[in-house]
Amino acid sequence: MKRQAIYISQFQHQNPIPNAARLGSVIASGLIRGVDPKTHEFPADMTQQCTYMFDNIRATVEAAGATIDSIVKVTFWMEQMNRASINVEWTKMFPDEATRPARQIMLSPMEPHVLVQCDFLAVVSE
Image (cartoon, rainbow, N blue to C red; front, side, top):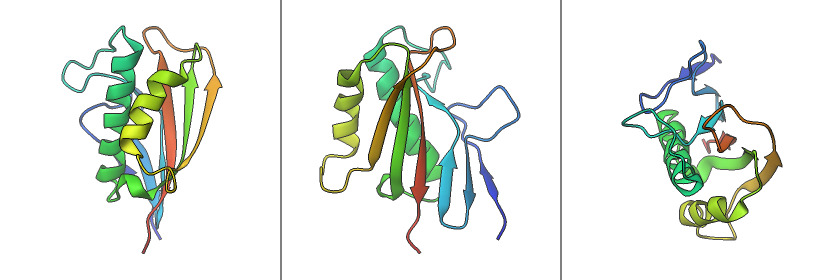
């Protein structure tokens, strides 16, 4: 089994790392942020960063050959706790409470302009 690096054009890391990696049925993302896919800038607004971040989650898991239904865990980091902004996009992406992935939110210092970031773990059914 060979690991596959996953790159997407909407946002790329400045360091030499992929957006995600897939090994067999497991997909692990790197950090996913709320960057505008057209301008590559961070909006000043938490709500808009969350919207872009969730769009980037979807783009990343789909680039790895899976769907959001494959996601089993999402971890979020925020400089200031703001569950409401995450919850809006969370319930849009995962409307069925019986099939939502696990989630964790942690407080953490952020780079300038970054208000929220996440990573995910997905398992693809064979």
